[in-house]
Length: 521
Image (cartoon, rainbow, N blue to C red; front, side, top):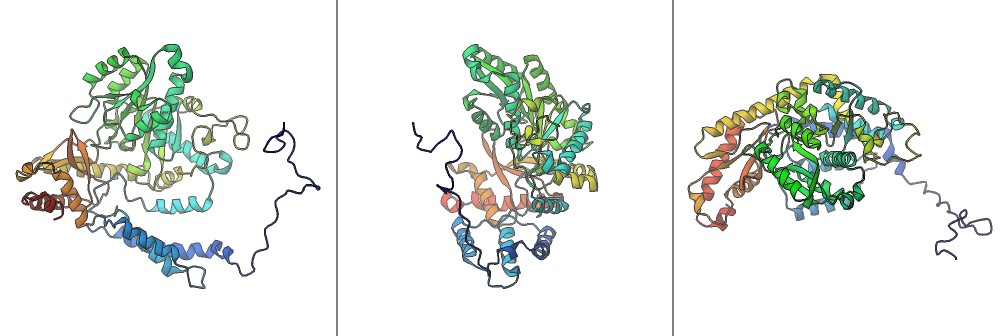
């Protein structure tokens, strides 16, 4: 029977008699100048323009928040740029480039400002901007050794540096880089599933039990995404209760797990957190390790925020027990102050990542693995050599540059906590374990404004005023103001200025009896 797609069993159906072959495109217009855009001189000229702009941005540490434009206004500006054509005959229209850079920086979060206390990303170590440029211009994926010789070796060196900090025996563990903590968590849970339930497809039928994972009630949302992607299902997540510090409560965890088992769930993985997104809490890792060993769970630690404490002799003890986990991840683009994304995923057993992904592709992988092809252990194929952003400052400055900044950020968080404890008009919701601190402004007048979220109104007005940038979260069922100290130039005086701003705004809102007017003051 003839296929509607032609003869699928033989060679392509074209010949001299049936010349259905691709035709050459017409010759290019001699006046075409597309090649000019690839001229190497442009790099030199454009880079000098950009560096001057970036230098001014980095140097401006004055308190300033986010100037949030309306989407309609920003769309108008963007469309106007799209309609413009350079009228310059030069290789580069520097004026147009400057305008684009100005718009980019003006609409970006001012991470180098002493008013920036809102998110979990930092102004980067400046030299890493150059590393990113090198990586972009090299334009080579790091998934296999042939295209990324140096990055492949660098991954091994960085893995050894962290392995030494963990006390792991060289040659027994492995590390994989991924583009972000969410992908690292998905990868680790997939490894856990394949290790603990090799025949996952038939597991539920054969065992008459439901595969599940246990997590902190404050776990990052990427874990919920991961279980859906992996075919487990969000209703097969067992949330473990947390204590008033935001940590997994050990006194309730065992009972919760026992109840899940009695209800037909087979927990194969427990995910703990080292630095929760909400309050920066670090779960009791040692105790959880013992629990996982007893129950034969895979133990994964999402250390996206706090895992980098390993590089600090002062802070490392807060992660005691992380060295016992089956896997853990840390985001170097968060608390190691690098350009996004650069996540390190560690496996205690070197054999673990080989159980994760199908890896038969003759056009990439060799018949015999040399353990240098990162693509064999990662979902990504065209993956940036992100490890270079970490290695170059590590070589130039040592791990101390990361450790000292982390220690400075945790110190200012503790100073801010002490400041709040003596302020009668603020309620501090936890003692910081990292560089994140959550609190509420208290006003007697605000309690009479029913149906109105006082803390959100304060936060929105602060953002509108444009001097500070902070975030908000829900803690123990209450909306709270949240600061994340990521700029080492912030000191206690900057935080006191923020509190004064909150007081001023809060008092204006609370003294206004009309909620609608309060929202717009």
